[in-house]
Each structure stands twice: as C-alpha cells, then as structure tokens.
View 1 (cartoon, one colour):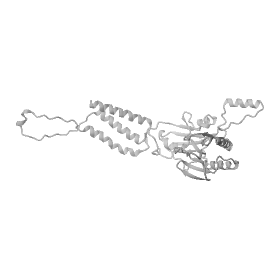
View 2: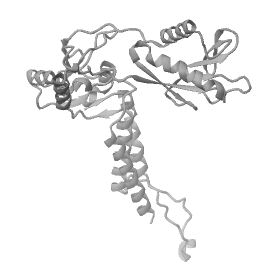
View 3: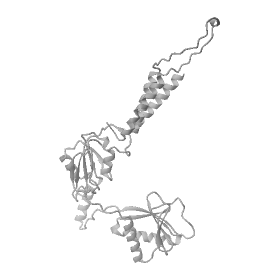
View 4: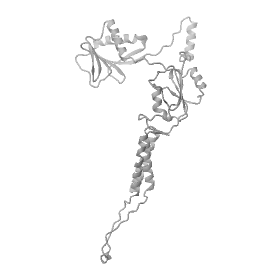
Length: 352
C-alpha cells in the first residue's frame, strides 16, 4: 500500500470530531414544578455532564467515511499488478516478440500496449504494481529521455530488429505474393498508411478547386507521408485554417495553431492562432508553393530524438515517486459513495 500525496494524512485528527460530537449530551429534559415544591427552599438547579456513547453504528460509519475521504485525497493505492510486458502494437504478433517474452521468463506476465511516453507514464502509474514486479518493454525503437529513468521497479528495454514488424506477414499476403511471382509480376511492397492532417478551407466557390489542387499536391510530397483532409469547420484536430475571404471575418470561436489569410506578406500572433499572410491566395507558382510547403513543415516538424539503446535498469527508488498527477483508484470512490449513502440512511433513521 502506498500513497502519492502523503501530506493529506496529517488531516487524520479530523476523526476526533465525530467522536466528540457523539459523546456530547444532547438530550434535554423538561422541568415541571410540583405543587408541594413551594414549601421547599429555593435552590439553583445543578446539572452534571456525563460523557457517554450514543448511536455507535452511525459513529463508526462517519469515522469510516472521513477515513476513506482522507485516503482518497492522499491517493491511496493498493498495488495489485504483477510482471507486465509492454509491447508496441507494430510488433505485437511478431515471432521475435514471443521469443523475447520466453527468454525473459515472462510467459505468464500480463500484456499491455506500449504508452506513447513510456518512462513518464510509468513514473506516474507504477504505484499500481507490486514492489517485486518487473517491466519488459518491447519496441522497434525508443527515444532517449533527457534524464535516465528512475523507477521503483526493475525494467528491461529490448529493441526489435528492423525486419521484425514485417516478418509476420499474414498468410493472405504471402499467397498473393506467390501468385504474383508465378504470374511473372513483382508483388508490391507493403506501404505505411499516410498520416491524416486536418485543414479547414473557407474560400469563394471559384477558388475552392485551386485550394483542393494545392493540398492534393502537398499530399504527394514527402513520399505521401501526409494526407491532407479538407473540411468546412474546425475540430480539435485541425492544425491549419485557410481564410480566403475578404468580405467576412472568421468566427471568434475558431482557433487553430496556424492560419493562412490574405494581406501584406508577413506573420503575426493573434488570439485565434499564428497567422501567415500573403498578397494572393492560393499560390499558383510551383516554386512559391514549394517554398510555402517547406516553411510549413519546418515550423511544425518535431525535432528528431536520439535513440535509446537496449538496456536493463535496476530499481532506483525504494517506493514509487509521490506525484500530484496520480489518480485515486476507482474502488475508493465507490467506497466513498457507499459510506455516504449509509451515513445518510442511519442519520435519517435516528431522527425518526
């Protein structure tokens, strides 16, 4: 059992409040004068306060509710996961993957898809694994992090050979290749699907075809690695908005990382995104279109990461790193709701 935000445990003295509340004498007795009391000397009434337990089931439920709330705020987690293999989907069914899992002695380990940023993801979520659990990471390549990963569990990174992803071609592909070879035609090599890049184009009808032709030419550049999808309205995936209209302004709610608009050549930052302006859109000159494409790709291309070599890493921490970004498990939230419902039911029954 571990806690990602242990400072919340200093709130445990709050558990004394229900105890104090339930031990108070809250029942009032009504005093009535007797007829013969007028013959007795007057005396001031005296009360003796006695601490006593009352409504013990309700008290226990309220204590459990406060304790569960503090545990939820402290992100209390009970490690339950064991050895795990993280596999890149590209090599999941490769014979090399099965061979590496057997060689590492993790045939009975659970499998999970490889996260995008595996080292940061493990640092935020490794509190879900038991202390003696091991990580086996299988991927075609891995980017070198800025700092060496410091995990609380042993981790091993193994990189597949370049042909591992293509070594497990389906039988249908093999049969089609054999048929093509028998017919004297060379079978085509499998290609990687292009990445969709979403663009919004707002222009007069007579210039829509020109914009479509321009982005079709962009789709054939870089060996077809990108496919530009044109839409009428932006979505969260939109990375470029082309506003080729002089008679209207774009809606204020439209936002994108980059805009192309008509105007004097230049660029400026606006609340809706970075705006590139040119005197005439769309570009008709092939050299100008090539220069625009290269400038656009250079502005959006992520820097290449250094590759990380295959290696084994021993545990560098005694326990997982406390982090405010970790989330409490779902079972704690369910326990909170159940205890709150029980507390309300018992409180209502006591009043009745």
